Image (cartoon, rainbow, N blue to C red; front, side, top):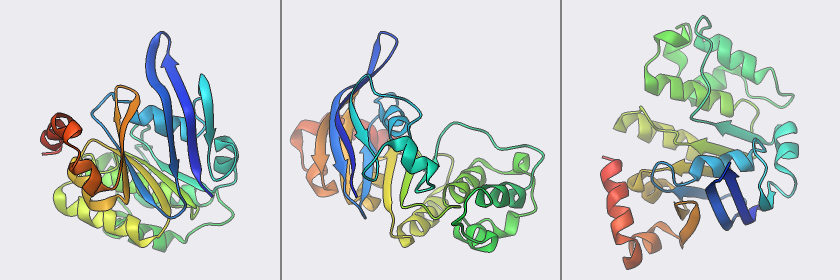
Length: 228
């Protein structure tokens, strides 16, 4: 089932964040929401998770309301915001997350999947930024979701960790929507790219089509420089 945005608008007070945004995410695809910081990517993810309500338009996730898909455990999310309990170990956090689901992965599978086996007994406040991101990924995958949302997932990861992270994500064969300001990441791992600029969709297509769009040359140069 598709996940669909239909002419969605959203504002923070009098400041518009999204304006008449429309797109669809077919089942089984990996779709990148590409744009600079503040473009509206995180707001888009929040709306698809039911964390915010559109001022106008309609959001459908897996054929129904976003909050229903989340409540049924069909959606996993790795967000930029939200801390980890400082006094808990990696194993504690991941095991707690998996116990919230009826349909769940084993603890060992999750630690292996996220590359956390060697740091399972470490307290979360002793982790590097990249390791904390991997814990958030394990939590997002705990319930075997049909649809996975990733908001700037590889921030604080080095090149090798990024590559390992994406190998794990792609190996699951799930529908994935990820927000990024890294052009190279969208190019390497997305089946389709949706470019968002100042709250509007300005382009959509395969990575090759996006890179070949002369109208996006300046915007893509900025994103290339941000991603270095």
